[in-house]
Amino acid sequence: MWRKASAAVLLALAMGYFYHGRPDLPEQILQYMGLPHLHTSSQNQKSLEQVVSAAWEALITLPAQQWSKVAVGVNACVDVVVSGVGLLQALAVDPGTGLDHEVLQSKEDLKETFIHFMERGAAAERFFSDSEVFKRIARAAAEYPGAKLYVGGNAALIGQKFSSYPDLMVLLCGPVGPKLHELLDEQIIVPPGSLQETDEFHLILEYKAGERWGSTQAPQANRFIFSHDVSNGEMSSLETFVASLEEFQPELVVLSGLHMMESQGRELWEERLKQTVASIADIAKDIPVHLELASMTDRDFMNSIMQEVMPMVSSMGLNEQELLFLSQAGGGPHSALPAWKDIPDVGRVSDILLWILEHHGRSDLSSESNLTRIHFHTLDYHILATVGGHWGNQAAAVMAGARVASSQACGLQVVDVDKVELKAPLEFYSSHSKPREHLSLNPAEPVTAWHRGNVSFHMTPVLVCKHPLRTVGLGDAISAEGLYYSQFKSQQHI
Image (cartoon, one colour):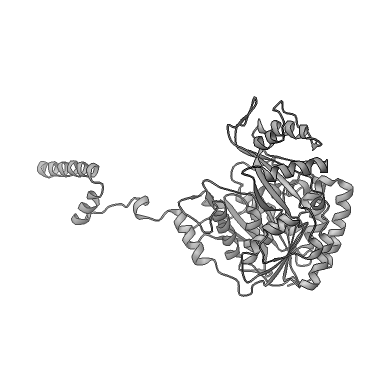
């Protein structure tokens, strides 16, 4: 007996010795001896990221009926991304102390407000009231070495994404100046009424973590944005947009830019919202209208959009901040929550989406509302909530949106599994309160579906880019991709 035990010990010691010298030998020995062994996941199993990415490629399919014409409006601009400290130095502005100004009226206001947020490492956006001074600053920014000019504005970014599909005709209405026209894909049709002599520039002043200017040091990287954007703020292209639809005959209409009116004051946005509702009412009933939301801070303004505009549209896209603010503005579920903590809870998100479709959508078949689809996106996962019978191919649509988020954030055309990571919860609940379903995510079939009444939910993870290159416009690309893979069935009562 002791001989067998000694032999076992000696064998174990020998295998340990060989393992440190040749890690591949123990597996060979075990295979030779016919003994059971375990494979390490890094060497012999696919990573979860590989499994999800492969499943997306296998499962994402186009709908039976595709769009051939899409009209998009109405906010568009040129984003000028430049070094904040470098630009201010080029403007011959000396460093000093920070002071926040709600409205910028001079280079001195710009300097003080920039320093105020730079020393906090916080993002902010301000309106520059003096048009002539802003033009001079914008010209200096565009000519600054290393400055980068991009297509900006939700409508232009969504149109730009749609234009990447060669089988799709895209109409874009918005304030399109010479530089933006040059940056836009040549496939995009811009009606003459949208063309203007000058561009609307949004200046994005970036700073790096640890960057210094005088006595100020940035604790983390961020950006400060400012503009003198009256055209987008007044939604001046709205009437041109609607007038262009009759000739263009789109099968899908995408509307964005409502958030830009918030800074124009209550009197203006109240009047323009009424005109927006009237304009949407002029669109043929069989053409779905998608509304893309963006960041807002005025609860009355958000509530007015919810009451007046949302029932007029068929579909809506928004992120976690906009979803929670919408609930806070309307007194919906979890409205007492001041902000999301870490990854937004799937159950809470599901509750708010259901509330929107029940109170402002057509989950009740007797409702006069047209809203039957909401595309929600956050960093780690996406959810598509739809009223039964109105939309098809939604599992593929939500996966397609997540896939483009995973690739575009890394500056790539396809997902690189070495540059992304799965951070979505693998187990969650269909609601924050009981009764509720306990649900799980299967990476090999990365869409989890559940139903609440006649509302269907499809959830998929995002493979989060570890080192994102540019996240501006990511939400617009997600919504565009989700719509491209969606099939609209009917807006009539079913």
